[in-house]
Image 1 (tube, rainbow, N blue to C red):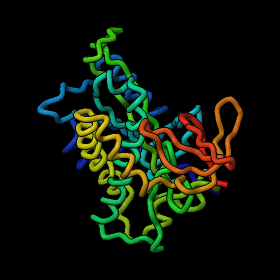
Image 2: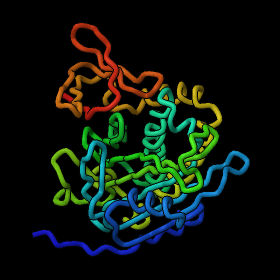
Image 3: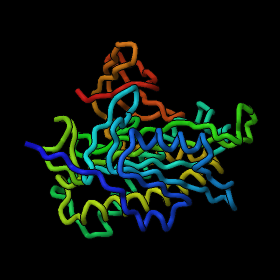
Amino acid sequence: MMIALKAATPQLPRTTAVADHVVAVDETDSTNALAAQMIGDGSLTLPDHQDGELAVAVVAADRQTAGRGRNGHKWISQPGRCSTMSYAVRIPRAIATDESVNGWLQMIAGLVTLDALNGMIEEYGATPNQPDCLLELKWPNDVFCHGLKLGGLLSELVIPPSSGTDADADADVVIVFGVGLNLALGACWLPTPQSTSLQLHVTGLPSFGEMRDAVAERQVEGFRERLAKFIADPKGQAESLREEMKTVCWARGRQVEAHFTDGTTLTGEAIGLNEDASLILRTQDGTDHTVRTADVGVL
C-alpha cells in the first residue's frame, strides 16, 4: 500500500540567488498554467533585456494536480520526489513565431535540462550505475535514460499585458518552459512501465531538495545563456544546435513509429533533424519525411 505524500513549499535558495523572480507554492494545478496566469494579470513581470542578458522567472510547486504534457497528455508526479518547475523568459515575438527557427526553443529547453542534470551529478560526485547510463533527449520533448522516460518538457507562448494584440515584430512575448523530472522516485512509484527516475540509475545523489534546487539553479543560468545566444543569431545557433543534438538525440538511428494527432502513423528510421528542428524519418522505400508534431516511439 502506497502512502500519499504531503506537499511542501519548495525551498530554493540557490535558484533564488540567480533567478530574477521565484514563485514557490506547495500545490497548484500546473506550474505552466500558474505562470501564464501571473504573467497575464501582471503579478509576474520580467524586466527588459539588459546588455544582452535575459531575465528568467521560476514558478515551482511540490505537487501538480493537473500537470500537462504535449498533445493533451497528463504529467503525473509525486511531491518530495519529482521536480515540477516552469521557467519564463521574454524573447522577441519575431523569433517566437518564426517557424523556420522556433522549433529550436524546445530543443534548447531539452539541452538546458541535460546540462543541468549532468552538472548536478558531477557537482555531488555521484556516479552512474552502468557505464552507458547516458541522459538523452527523445524528440521533441522527453528526457530519456536507457530508453525510459525520466522527464518531460512543455513550452508555451504567453502574451504579456504590455504587448496587447500588437503584432509589432519588435515586441516581446514570454515563453514558459515547463520541466517535470523524476529525481527521487522509487521503482514502486513509477507511473508507467516506460518511465524511470534518476535515483534508479545514479548512486551518491544528494537529498531530493538539494537535487531540485541545484538542477533549477543550473536551468536558470542555462536558459539565460543559451537563449541570449539564440536571439542574437537564430540561424547560426540553429546549425550549432543541430550538430549538438546529434550526440544526444535518442531516436537518431533507430527504427521508430510516429503517431500523429489524426490517428495515422509513419514507420521508418529517424536519421536526424532538419534546419527547423523537425525530425527526418526515412521510410523503407528510401523516402525522407518531415515530422513536426507527433509522438515518436521506438520499434
